[in-house]
Length: 328
Image (tube, rainbow, N blue to C red; front, side, top):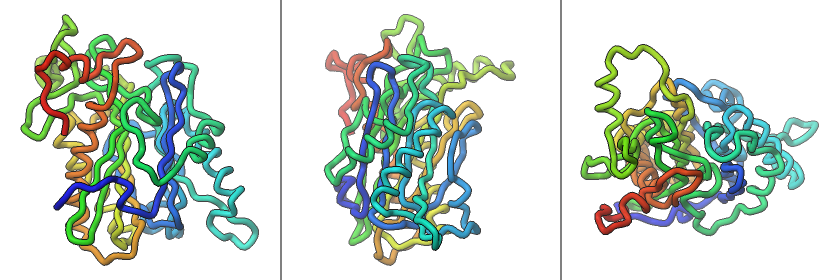
């Protein structure tokens, strides 16, 4: 298995738009054609739109786009901008009366960063569509990653900056990649199993372990910091059904679990979409394993590409004194 560029998977475009002053943004994945899709939600606090059409028993055979955004549930208005962009180009599900663009969306909570009144809206999502292209997307403080943070068990004062990342692999002719906005309650761990970012210590000059803090608070019964949710999208050139893609999305959560600890908490809305963008025969188990590996690496790159902002220290700043592990 060899690493490739995310856009080498083919069949889609990616576009970002953001409000850097407000600390929020959105990222759109536009499919070149109506594409089968699946979704697996493991977090306890999701905010989503048109998610039920991805149920394997739903009538829709595919979707036109996926939108990832900040703004919590306020950001759900943004999908209207993607719909308008697609409608103007006569793209959508043919109803016999009009073509209706099918756009699935999930939102993450970034209201605690920047301006709480700044939220992605239809105009911002429309700009993301205008910005969409086949070039490698920017990573870090862009799009849905603009207001992302990690390690929030003790609140924003001891959290770190995160962002948007991507990674893809190829095995034979099969390709699978992952795009992700990392906004987790938990910490992020590298391939060697060591923590690389997340909860800061009380002095904000080094790392503390969210898991250790959590286990010390064993009598705690509620009150986890609510401002979280990691959102991911899997893309593959394999020809898979909605049912198979739902399984791929579920397997890809293994990438979340390897890179984020704890993950899938009641204070996270962790969700993963999976899109079939090609016609190549492929085994769902192979694609799922590749996608999980790509997602793990994409999460690390989201953290390592972010820069300090909104009072949040980044991995680059914390490890900038020559002690940093090598980026992956």
